[in-house]
Image 1 (cartoon, one colour):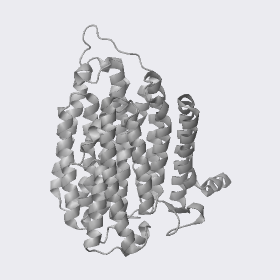
Image 2 (cartoon, one colour; image 1 turned 90 degrees about the vertical axis):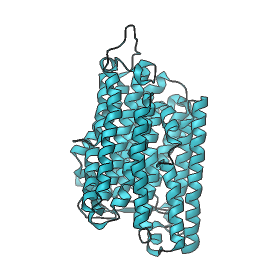
Image 3 (cartoon, one colour; image 1 turned 30 degrees about the vertical axis):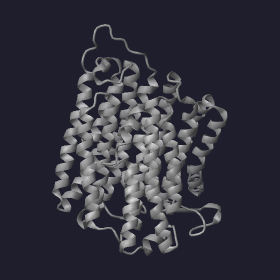
Length: 493
């Protein structure tokens, strides 16, 4: 057994984590929709196993580095895996697997877009994995662009006028964000002669140049993350896309730009960031929580409720920055913000898949057309409710752990006003989620018919909803992984 374990730990898992989804992408593109559909689950399972293998190696041996082609920084491309990167890789692989399982049956009933869904999804997952492992600001830019192009293509899959308009708006927002980020990269390289994150963090000094770079790159990434008030592109893109696409976009894609902000603020910008700048991000996050929740409460289409819920939940991620600006709460803020990102990913993917099944069965997206769903699709409605528990921050979910850590950081740092925002956000979340549940529990009107759905559509949403609860019941494992190579390595949350 020890020999097998040693052999597994010796595998270059970093190459496999990136190479597997990209290999699948090429195979799916060349072989067509049917073969892409058949190869999807084996490829996604292997990708999850590779992420598990890399995480086990990081836990056993500490952060891992891999020099592509034997050339490291500053001349070559260096890949770096620590606990934060591994947790994001595990999140991506797990959600990709359940969403792929759902998509196999979803596109069997909805042919529009099936041909290109599989290669674009493989490309998206491969780009995300490469982004999480990149160790220099330019390679991060390249992977972020590849991710954005795949996401825009997925939004446009259905081909209708609304989908194309949403994809174009998404593309323009993504390009604007990328341009600002790239300008920051150019300024950093011109001033310091390196692109490596570790070297930039050691060389950056406070001053007008550093503050200009911080403003440009933060604004660009905030636009890509759809932080209020830059969220204009998100609801039509997420709410109007095919259901598996909505789940991938909301659960995974927006986390990539947030991950970049974490890396930059805590590893590169740390010497130059100011408390007012961190507080500004917190104010925008609070605006997202309150405004996004209110807009979700006002929607009539159930997928748009879930899309605006994403706008609101993004706000909690940005509370990390002001809470981490004060020493007493910095560790709890860091762990709480990252855990919120992961918990939201599982809950929101489950919610979109569950809602997608309800819409398929009812044939309409209007919330007042959900009557009778509780009797027809009880497992989907139960999955929706379980995911809602995490979004509301109730025990025993992962969302509860995340929000508890953020509340702990706010109280430790004397920033009680963020506690008020989180409580109000939780109440508003309960309001728009219970609105959906109320309509779903109404008896079906006379003569109403529902489409029959394969069990896999409900089971995939249920699996993700259970994952959102497991993150609360077994928080010690992910938090232990986060302590490997994190900015506060060895600290207790």
